[in-house]
Image 1 (cartoon, rainbow, N blue to C red):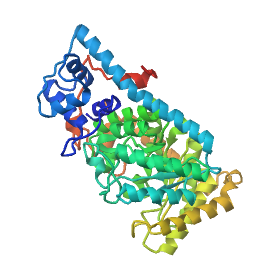
Image 2 (image 1 turned 90 degrees about the vertical axis):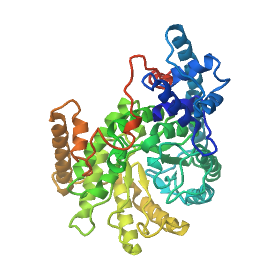
Image 3 (image 1 turned 180 degrees about the vertical axis):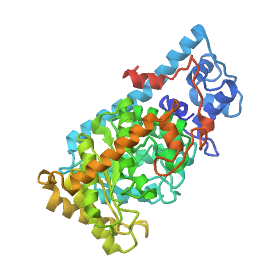
Image 4 (image 1 turned 180 degrees about the horizontal axis):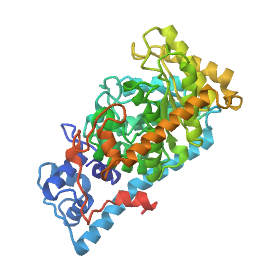
Length: 490
């Protein structure tokens, strides 16, 4: 259902009724009740427009909300004509994405990229977009290269995208098209001020993953959190819906030139970071496969991993180095996203700042692409600007003092680090082989159901959003998918 709603958004349908229910939801629901979604939403919608049911798409959606429109599945010449008109409308949204990608390239050329790698990635999310903006701009002035606006708690489980600028988020700010527009405009101003292009990140996950991806492409976001299995494992969203939605969203990201960030760090919050290290590698390989199948390139694969080993464990730092270096070696052309310690942060801000410093050092030693700034107040409070300033000082010191160590750091052959990396890789290969050898038509789905990843058992026949999964009929048509797969613009 979200793929069909995303397609309508690309065709220009936006807004919501007085109860804040989006018009795309109303229209897709009405079509589904009338004729089903097996043929897609665009054929019956543009057939209705051609028959004069309404003068435009918005009016049709408004009429459909009161069920005052009769839909049908057109055939023959009527189906051909409806298909052509829907493709023309959806192509406007695809060309908007293309223009935004070109605009990003111009601005990067004008303002420049950060001088160093990894890029410094910092989270801002107060719940109020008008409070987020000055905090994000302040962070960019203090050295942040990427601003991530995390979503309000629970938004991933909403089966609609909120409308307008929002000020009422909890532990995060709602992802809406207007919030995207406001933050992007503010960071464009700051990019000009600081002399480097500041990238903006949000979350394309949950029940509205395709829609948020489409909105991100049209509003020129630069990175999106987008994992192939996160919603399944950690939000109990139906596996089939998640795999369908992630493919469409990644096709949009590929077209938009957006870098995806995957969520392997989450595995280590529910599983032991030493014993489950190989599941991170397996997930990275799966995310790479699904991403490339959808058209993403290596430079767009911000594959995730994290510094989450218990610091009290002997040789914990050496193992963190081994795991980080393994990821870098396996994916040499990907801008890997390195995540800071969270699970073992205790509220001791001095120890926390030291742990973050060690995390930053691993990032410098192993050449990570994107470094999420760790907070010494993790698990204590939502960070203040002053907390972020201290955290950014930590990052700046390490990268300035040790940023070039990547070229010097070569662990000895058959030493602890190389041996540990080979062990993790071997366990990852064994697990992939085990999944492949399982009987049945869908071994990956069976592995997910058995709790292979993150110790979460998620069967393909259950989970949130299952009622929004529809099997395609032979005559299914979706012009957005066609345009994205062919690279066409009209």
